Amino acid sequence: MSKLALVTGAARGIGLATTNRFLNEGWKVIMIDWDGEELGKVSSPLHNAIAITADISKQGDVKAFMSEVLEKFGHLDALVNNAGVADFGPIEETTFERWRAVMETNLDGTFLVSQEAIPFLKTRGGAIVNIASISGLRGSTLRTAYGTSKGAVIQLSLQQAVELGEFGIRVNTVCPGPVRTKLAMAVHTQDIIDAYHDAIPLNRYGDEDEIANAIFFLCSDQASFITGQTLAVDGGFEATGVGLPALRK
Image 1: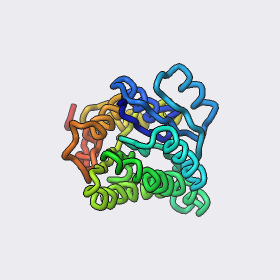
Image 2 (image 1 turned 90 degrees about the horizontal axis):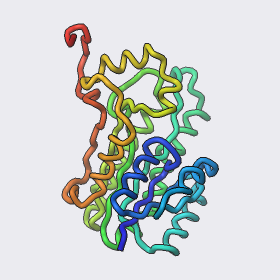
Image 3 (image 1 turned 120 degrees about the vertical axis):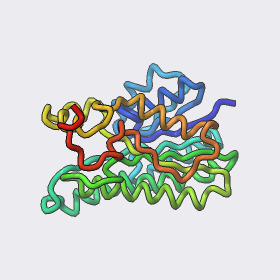
Image 4 (image 1 turned 135 degrees about the horizontal axis):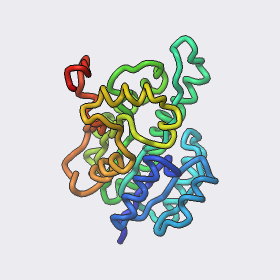
């Protein structure tokens, strides 16, 4: 029987790369995204992928697509909570509405999907991988809402790991560093790109497939004794201190 993964935010970027990684390994994948048009476009050529348009920040949507999973499959082997939104700006300009919009998807959505998935994962054990960010591990400019939401996701993962381990459910967090996605490249100026390259020991952005490889590993049997861990996939960015790029030339 094929293993089954559910990936949120699957229409693009890391979520789509992760979907393809699972499919290449012979898994079936349920792809969740709120952008139905894009989701339909990218999922149509994929075999063993089931696309469902839903907003994970809405409890009704989550219950509905999980009921569909139950009806069709009755089990789940891996959950990747990847869907997220970003909102960058100074603290004083971050309205409560903007703050809540970030929390509703990044934190509330991760909680809601995980909670509904637990009964499915209990049937034969499984894995949850929550996608946080390097911004959840270290402070950064203009990311009050985003960074705080991702820090909370890391803590949520620890709570899940401790409570769900007795059921054979492993929970880990992946914290991507700067990744060369279309969105990032559209908003990162050359100065920002140069600054990241100087701050990252590997001197480059990561790519989506590199993040997907880490996610798949943590969902696979090869990570069968790994739970409650936070893995920064960031080219060494989180390990750096003050920096001093001039000394590295």
